[in-house]
Length: 315
Length: 292
Image 1: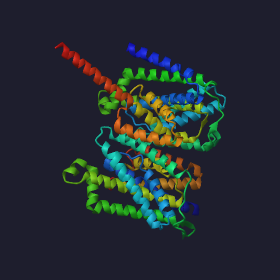
Image 2: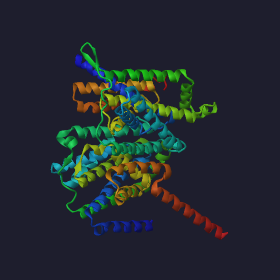
Image 3: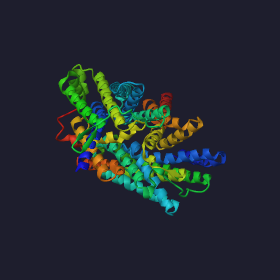
Image 4: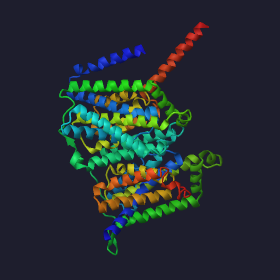
């Protein structure tokens, strides 16, 4: 545990130095973008990774957060407050989805959540007075004026999100979430308030994803209704699946990998989505636990092997 | 009054295409217990193949057939490469959902790169219209309704009257038992998958004839076909037809009496209302016995 904390502090320190080494503003922008993606992916990981609830409303949550934040900022609300509003909006939307689709079972609940994303997309497309329709919104304030400061703010927010996830996952609440994921009916049988726990997780997930959406809007400085569509869904799902669903760092690793690697390979923009889709296919076929999941498994095997050899030496 | 009648007729035509779009998804869910996220990409591929064939001078019937076959082929490949290997996974539903989500994105964006973003049009293969009093029904819409009716009638006969149909039903009910009595479950699943995707291809061609074809044609129907499967109760084609017509009518009535930009939202609201009152799907009650 102590080693873990030291490692985390060291990683944070190294990450904080990135703006001193990355001089190219575009590169720093892309890295900042991956931090935002990581926050959204952490949100999705709560439901898809820890609770075992299929949640396909990502696009809707991100778009709602983005528009709530941009519209508030355009109307003179200070940026931090606008972000809080976005988070709150996401929580409300998630609560609404959870209540409306409450009677759908498992898999069907997941399929229905994509309809919620579609409702958000249609709303932001049609409410022209607020959202400027398909032309999109621009001209609202930035997170901060300097790209480096923006990066640091995002890094702090991401660190808080990771620490928050870690705290919850290691608490008894996290244990209860995982027990629901492993066997919901057994969890119910031993007296866990399954619906309430699921609802709380779903709302938390929606709030975090909407916060990611708000940050995305501030970073991109342009948003349009397409944010609510399939591309956001596939990117975020890929971040979680590639990094490792149900691991604390998985979504972060996934977000970094899919944002930075295509840049590094200088992949054309149209090819990027093809690459994402193909990677998702490969991950499902070949690395079911994701990168972090595979590493954890390998580590565990090595530790067991070492223990086994120690035992053998003793006898 | 004329407006209402006109809206009802257009709604029927839209509902017919919705039914074709979603039927295969429902069949696949009934047989495999999984959802194919790339299902409506078969519509796009079918429509694209048909447009390509028509532009090469093929008569419309041939182009239509080419579209259906292209979609069925893509379906067969999807099953063989991406669904079958995952059926033994413990988390098969999520895995297949994600893998086909990846596939959908690949197909759509590959088509964008190869074909461009410009919509293409058929060269009016079904001109003319039918007049019923003051209500006008264009030939392409009439063809959508009639073809959908014929196809679903044939499908119904296929399932209820043939050995293949019985094999499909048995596989849907209990794949293990079906295997034990000698039904080639794997092949039955492959055929049903391909047929379902062929239906989507047909829907795509008909949609393309009435409107236009582009690389996003598939995504346009994606959420709608999900909604239809959830709403109708999976694996129940009769109820799927009812729901498709319901949503088609909703869309066209909302367009006629409110504003076309609120059509899709009206459809979603109807879906949410149905799901809140009947979470097991419309088909679970009265239509339940008309399985597949």
